[in-house]
Length: 49
Image (cartoon, rainbow, N blue to C red; front, side, top):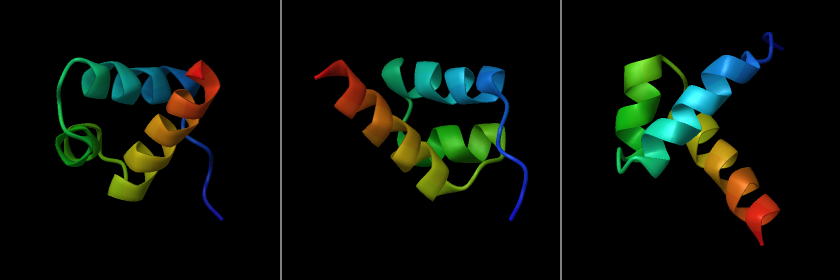
């Protein structure tokens, strides 16, 4: 299993997606898996409920 992404990187991915970048675009831009971007936003959405 790989190392977890830094909190800074996770925040950047979320901010990019909330700024209207697609999950796919944000994943490619920051060099993370698409599933990572999708999962991160799922957690954010669940936390905000």
